[in-house]
Image 1 (tube, rainbow, N blue to C red):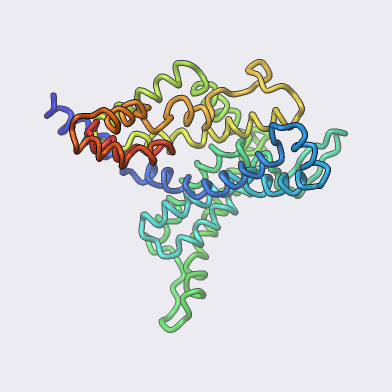
Image 2: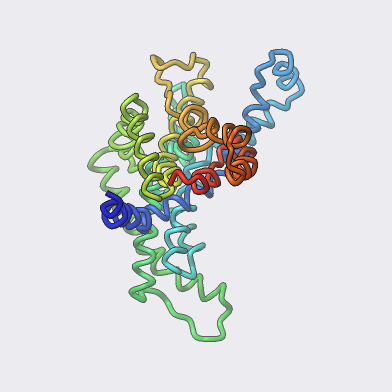
Length: 341
């Protein structure tokens, strides 16, 4: 059994987790994390659970400021994601102009998302970037565009499809010209995709992806079976020696963030947040508080036991080392030290 796990299971899982796509997804999603945390903090301040404090925050104008901060951080998660994934993909490919490629990914995302919005009175406003699509609704689209741009940009550089400048030209200028052809090719490809979606499907690429992929994905994961499958998968990955939290978190993070954004949109509309009104149960908070409290495997009971009751001095030392990080869902010391893996 051990030979089968080490030579078959672990090998194939390691190959999967080290693919360009998965590595770019894991690394790229981390770019949005600081903005999500800051945005969530200001959202909490603007919606304090104590009525008197909430009224005070609203009357002094602080709620409006918090709302602006929230809409400039949390509501732009798709933009951060497409930049992060494109940059990570190119950086992992050791492309020196990865920043230029990331900006190309941003331009491609804007190109392929709706540039108009219909107001409540029926009037259509054009030439806008809707925050509906820079937030949760655009997450899967942002991921796909990040992969597409990263692949094409990297391919162009590796095939030497670029403008070369003579030696002595400043690096910034050389990088700009080196990015010219890859950016042009990507823009043309995205323009063709936009045209096909516009004239054939009468929609945009982002709206097509949202209706065809993201909504079904959110529905599948936001079910009892989906939660059980992802939890079991995470534990199995850990059991084989692979960082289950990192892999499952990287794959699930876009869906969980999209679910959070959808829930927030329901609250902003003044409707009760219920399943009947389209609310989602499986969000990042659900994952952290019910599936991964104290880390994958919910090992807080084991940590408390070995810290205070274990007869082994080494286990007690491990428990003392692990108990504080474990409170904050960091359990690598206990996972590898016991060892559970």
